[in-house]
Length: 466
Image 1 (cartoon, rainbow, N blue to C red):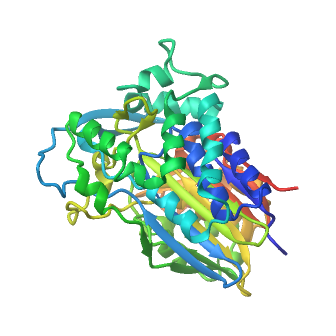
Image 2: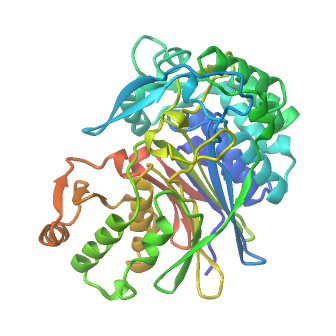
């Protein structure tokens, strides 16, 4: 059984761009890159060119998996600037508060332009300009803001409204609401420059110089040497099994692969009550906690190749490239990402985990990824259980209520089965019942034998070619 050619993403316009590239004869990589660039228009509340990400690629002919790291690097290689203090802000996801820091000093070296270029160089078929062009067109018109993203905007407004953000997200003095036009003046010109000059325009070209000048004017340390030294990295591919299926992905900060490997071998035969406890125990055993915004693109082409790319801005620094409609990342202000080994030039860590699943014969079963920081792992595990163990189609697996473990507390979405929560409570967990289905619980987008779907929590969609 083959996986249909299709796209799953966090916005209808993003998915449509990917589908159009597939229909034009593009590879999974072409479509994924085009969709990622489109997210800088359609999903800028969550991600953008000024951020970083990871890609996982499955080559059906050779049955090989490759993981690429184009996450953000620590600036400071120039050694000529001492960054100013960052600006602390408080953001609420549901009723959960989180402190972030924004401003120029929070900006790390962005990797999305370089990552898109490398994915296209390795696996693309269409000309680079053809792949970038749909995002340019989308940037000229803008997109309608989904209601789910409008709700997210309310939460992250303290990070998005500084600088040029106020004119973009609150053009009439109030925050945009669902169904209203989201437009980034100047973004079309920046993307057009990327189409004409390639990704290097953001590193050693004119937009790179603008990036340095803007960040330094905002108190950051990013300099020309940081941009010139940036490289996309190829990573070790992690492996775990679930039932008769093999899951491949990078080793992320939240240890998704180790979590899946820690699930009992008899999990497929367990009752749902016992399985809930086993999953909660595995989630508690590994991982860390962080809140943030991310988005994911999953693409499968007619040849059965798959490309999954997850990108993020962090919460967003509030530092915008003047006249370009590009918000820059806030990775240095994300406390859970700051590890003792960080130094200028070092690559930062992340919880993002784009993955592929293949069967015992090496054939693709699922290509998936998720948004949601520490909830990425939770959302992916639950979706894989739904598809691979429970036999659900992709929309149902992604949309069903989830739970997320923080220490000894189980956060459960509205509608999660009461008998399973009773079993978790009997196992010693405290249950925090949420009153709704909430974007806090992640945002999966996946294409597989069970269909294509995006997460309704974040306005996601999935579609396959006819």
